[in-house]
Amino acid sequence: MSSTSPESGPRARSAFTFVHLLVLVAIIALLIALLMPTIERLREQANLALCKDNLRKIGSALILYAHANGGDLPVSPTVENPHVELLNCLAAGGFTGDPKSYYCPSQHSPGLSFSDQNFRSGMIGYYYYSALNASTDTAQSKFLRGGVTWPRKLNTAMDPRTWVMSDIWVSALPTSHAGYKKGVNYLMLDGSVGFVGESPRQQFH
Image 1 (tube, rainbow, N blue to C red):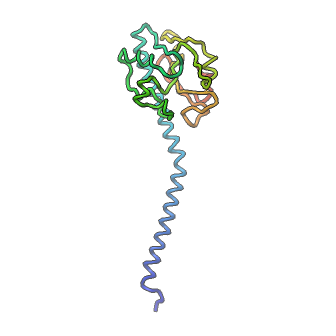
Image 2: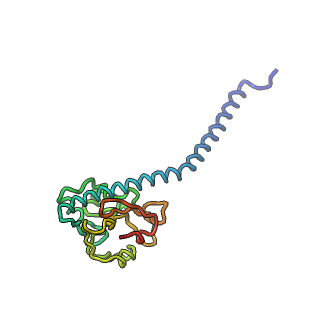
Image 3: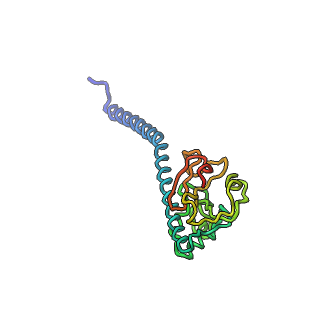
């Protein structure tokens, strides 16, 4: 004669199932924790590629503008925002394209991310290197304030490797592209795009 009551079997099976459920949840949580860095790296690689595509689109717009204006590119007051002159010149020729292209997808600062208000006010997510003067903002890279000759009026007859636009980079601070010492995409006068993982001032032309 068995001493096990009729209720002990189902109750034991319920307890067994609950323990396994807890183990399953723990395993899933562990897998997610292990996969998160990989997911973040993949997301950043996708943003890096999209950023390059944005710069290529802007480059195409600037080349069209230059062809219609003797090779000259628009000129901004400084390398930094706002870039009202740049956007107005492109808009006048119908070369603007998608406003979202002027913002790096890895850049999350509210003042440098896409919004209708930012775009209308000339606030974009990249540095533009066809400018009259060095920035007076001491937070900007010392190299851009003192190592580059201003005014810098770009024309397509210049060295095709000349930097036209790039991700924003500031001395002693990380750039928007995580995982690099100083990761910066940059647009050149011939419309091509390059990338530097550190020390962008050493690559700057």
